[in-house]
Length: 374
Image 1 (cartoon, rainbow, N blue to C red):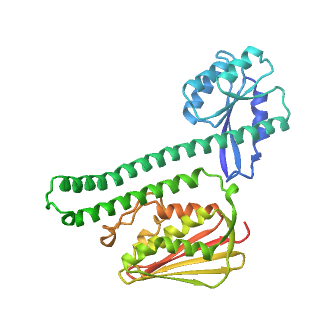
Image 2: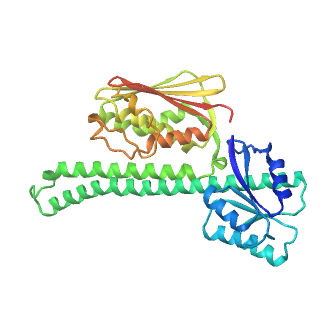
Image 3: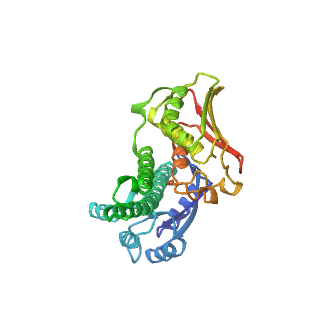
């Protein structure tokens, strides 16, 4: 259970002790909260003492009377606003004129509690204030995470695009200066390498677009029945040219008819990433086996490969954004570090699960489970 500190600023001892008594065994919960909240009560009879407690104890909620000896409540509120403290302030007063109410609201007061108040009136106000505070902090946290993700997004983009662009520019200058000769055949290797670099940049851009898409789009408008066996076949057809190049065989085993309500593009994101990885991290003449099955209430799709596998110490960060497993076997394999994190986010959107088993040097098995009845 979370604990919120409530500072009661009032020159009447009865008001302070009354708030402490009412909130002493009171807790707030809402279905959208991940924990309940109880309250620790702090008291201050003057505005000056309130400011000292605020600096020292950083309360979450301030119940502030305006009519105080010395510094008035609106002056305390003004100080809180100027210092940008992360707390919610409610005015508790029976003397609030319109001017005071306007000034208090402009300075950030979120609520007014009339005095005298009943226990139920106080509890109702505290419930509302707790909800405001919780949502405000969740929003702030999401914004901070968003800034971090945007920074990582741009860092990865600039870093991953800079190297291939430099390489392509170098190859083009070699051709411009005729360093290898006058015939186009003399430049077969630079041309092939340039095309590989372009494909790598295209894959990165597509990953970033998928990453943005699953964060921003509303999916309800695009839900329709999706046959998972057909979706797997489409993804295999997309990856097949790469598999042929890598000399990797792909086999699809259909054990059951599995149809779910989904956005077909979301399912394609899951399958394309997992099949592509199974080929990319495989061995020459390796094999990828995709099994479509059902268990009670869910569709099951298993992606098994004979690739390089995943070390136990790399498992924890496997689905983390912008993380790439670095080993001797992967140093020449390009990627954004976004693929599996995108897969995990899409699977989570559909209340599904993804798990992995792997033996280094032997291969990996990724299992996706999606509810049949959304």
